[in-house]
Length: 621
Ligand SMILES: Cc1ncc(C[n+]2csc(CCOP(=O)(O)OP(=O)(O)O)c2C)c(N)n1
Image (cartoon, rainbow, N blue to C red; front, side):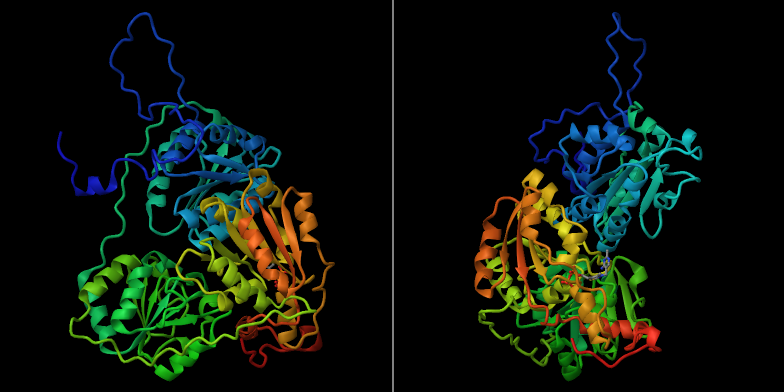
């Protein structure tokens, strides 16, 4: 037998994860997964012909082969056979309380493990409840396959219950590839499965995210068919062109520059640090890239965007680097606020796998776009780095100065004090993932938490749905040692929590609730633009009682002296645990830039009813 060549050796002939499934369930492949070869007349007496697998079973087998370990969702008649096939496989099936919660958990599980995950929903409202999660999956760059029930072709347009898919359904737009899905469609005929699987295999092999949605009518879910697995192996994007890296190295090495790291550079964190140390270029990070450069490193400048650090812009104005090397970020609003002061005079060298991001956020800034995988680009850049070049005598980034807060007595907990204690008790004492949520926790997390490595901090910066972290924390905990923390608002907790799901499966999710009995970010935003807040308060909720009423546990904290002990309890708890912190609502979260940005977009200092016009005086972050 001939030896496998290099490409075959690198790729193997198996899908990622095959044979490495950690599951107590035994998995007996239901069929050979190959098209049977006719060898002539059957021998006599005829053996009982083995039943071909159903499409559901064949699809599940393929998903196991693709490395899927978890499926999250809500069942229903329209998707029951597929749910059953998953339940009999090594994939762990978790039945949630809301489809959006299932989707957020799937996104976070995928991002924490790098594996594809599956979300299941039934027809009609099952699918429509997923919409927010689908958009979030795409915005976050996760690898998620949504599978939903659809109405069979013969019943469409005839008033079918929860009609889904086809020309007559209000939900047809959710089965079209485009800005929402990299691949989507209804499988109306079992023979379409092979081509669909090819799409999934190559899509999930991409280094960046991949989001797909398949609709399966019941008759297709139960149809029997011998399925041959796609014989497709894909090679990732090639090494970055050497000439390009030599030119970039020359441009960067001749004058001081700054590195602007985004979420897409998280897998290349060590190379980012090496380049910074070799060249003397300081590193600033977008909120989702926190930890790509250790946040204690002397060359780390700070965070840009929401909750960003003033010392980043101070440094850029003082040191005036000529260029920014932008790595794996689309420089969207929450990452940059499109601030001109973040763009150096000679512009950007922007590296990303998606060419559409070049020049999109800063169309008037001179940009050299390099379409490449960040790791491969940086490796080539380091190889091409001029031997003789000395690190630039960059102006030293200013040292971080943060006051050490002492617990105060007799008042509610200051959010800044809570963050300081989370830093000490959770981030420095464990390797748990810490998430923040749309609301004040986002800007607080960006500014006040410091991470030593990538993969520890998660926030949905671009889509930013409330409920993303409150439910996503289940997926993060499942993926990483059954422990993850979500710092969230009380409003978000009331919108969506999966206490009951976490209790059902003993998931070690910990929620740290900023309980201020209001939509705090909205209230503070209104005040900061000179409005008198309206309709932002709501009755204070007791999250410990809610958690206990749903099978979880928790503790209420209303004094700063008790914060550390409560966090330790959260860290030690085996199951789901809520830390319900009564916070001081008068401490303003560092979200001023967001309010400024809203002003630029047309929000006025005076409510429109009173004749307000767009724009308002600057609010410092
Ligand atoms: C699904 C969704 N609806 C509305 C918003 C707009 N929004 C952003 S923050 C916020 C208030 C958050 O309040 P809370 O969860 O209590 O957090 P706090 O700011 O008080 O810490 C709202 C309504 C959103 N991001 N997502």
